Amino acid sequence: MAQTSFTYDALPMRVLFGSGVVASLPGEVARLGARRALVLCSPEQRPTGETIADALGERSAGVLAEARMHVPIEIAQRARARAADLGADCCVAVGGGSAIGLGKAIALEHGLPVIAVPTTYAGSEMTTVWGLTEDGRKRTGKDPRVLPASVLYDPDLTLGLPIAMSVTSGFNAVAHAVEALYAPDRSPVVSLMAEEGVRSMAGALPAVFADGGDLGARTKALYASWLCGASLGATTMSLHHKLCHALGGTLDLPHAATHTVVLPHALAYNQPAAPEAAGALARALDTDDPARRLWELAGSLDAPRSLRGLGMSESDIEPIREQVVNAPYANPAPVTRDGVTRLLRAAWSGEPPPSRSA
Ligand code: NAD
Image (cartoon, rainbow, N blue to C red; front, side, top):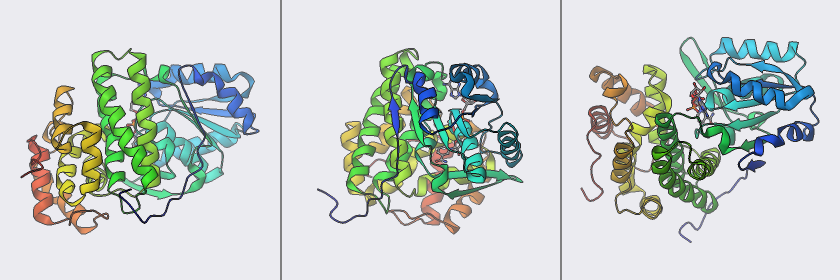
């Protein structure tokens, strides 16, 4: 037992997992005592949303296919009005963090329960965190009302997630688990989930990369995303997430790809100051240098490895560093100007992270 003192606060979660489990959706709606479920998805996933609404039959109040990254306030307001007009008494959010985020925005205002059917590995369905973007600024907060009442993880629905997005979304999940392992409010049970989440995702991604239609690999990746999302929901995130929020919020860089590029560098920054986390990651990734191993894994899966490649210019390094240094999240290693400059420079140019022994 590495950690001898902790507080563990369990979030209520109901998870149905497995191929074909989406067929249980009408029963889950009925279990809530609801009669009119509004189905939420992104425009690209309208066909999936409609299939879900058909399966709900008379318990469907319709499909709103307007979910967008970072939940723009205008879309949230439209969705809230639509839910009220249709007399919806619950929402079914089908998709990635954007669709689930829209469900959370409705729950925040009207208290409607959300059933989540995740089709990426982002993990929002396991957290009480909501986000809303207004005038280019994203506000986030925590509220227990936005935590989905049940979550249906059906790997069949992930078979069509494009390979490149699957890989970056998988790294997004791993990033949650990595920071949960050195979080100030970590606890042994969450650390077990996080370690297993990293092990499963790192094992699944090469097989998903080889064949996106491999149901076994998709099942393993979705299982990992549950564990990583639950680790995120149970802990407070550190430098890596602060960097990604600053990069995404200020420069509008793509969410999952930004996590993929930054993670090896943020972990290299923190692993000397977080030996227990580094040990768990070494076991999970079968290496003595977890940061370098993640960087190599990203390369082997054709994932982006430089912020420059994502469209960031060199002159953005300084303002991003200032945002991070001036309002740092709790972090195992001290967050210094020089250190964050070096980290951002390496992530920007696509260099490997410094090795663990360096
Ligand atoms: P996303 O939900 O925006 O999805 C990306 C794209 O993939 C969309 O076009 C979507 O239609 C498509 N897609 C999703 N699943 C698919 C599938 N199975 N097949 C084909 N296409 C599919 O992206 P995301 O990375 O899942 O979520 C990112 C958003 O979630 C960000 O706004 C982020 O801030 C938020 N997020 C929030 C939390 C939280 O705890 N609140 C956690 C993680 C992420």
